Image 1 (cartoon, one colour):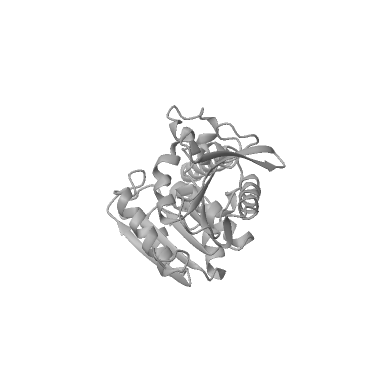
Image 2: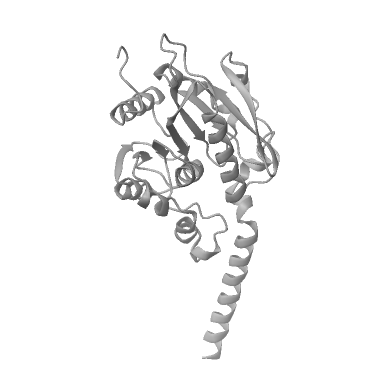
Length: 279
């Protein structure tokens, strides 16, 4: 009997040590991009319609890249997307793929995380959400942006800041790629730890329960990083949720970018964010 108790005691000590290490080092796991140098392929910054923006926050200046909507005969204020990327990425890689959204009549603001790339500070839920609010407020201060048609779009980790923005500022719609229910849920499911150990919770479930705008969720059915069940649950939870299941895993989603743009366009037309061409 004493052997069994000793084994249980050792197991408990080992689990406690594991939990303590996770608690103090979880942000290193959650924000690996904070140690990344600016992307080698930063050619998107040189596109003629890309403007470098410095957002002022309490931790210093955080970078963003702004792309204005493609020119059209309609000079009225147009809708815009605030985009947040995955945890192992930088904004440098996104101007090229996201530039296709300009042809839909959308401006795009790609927001960096504090401590990532050239940005000051360190990433945490507090500093990231402060940056998101600064980004939103910078965007709606522009005369060419319709503040009633701001869309928050987040991929993977970026789904947390995108949904979080909808809890702090008026957001007309949400587009979520491979989103999670909450970081607390991920801590339990992936690391077998109690949810209260999650320091940055990004509770997407809680915010979506009270969000009444349209929500588009796109999730890979073979995703082993953020399970498909998370995206399906969020789409079901949202008052006006739509789920698009994709045949992909996590980092290879969406499988077709042109198809993804068509899906975004259809969703935004249906939601009244975009108006059909010629009207």
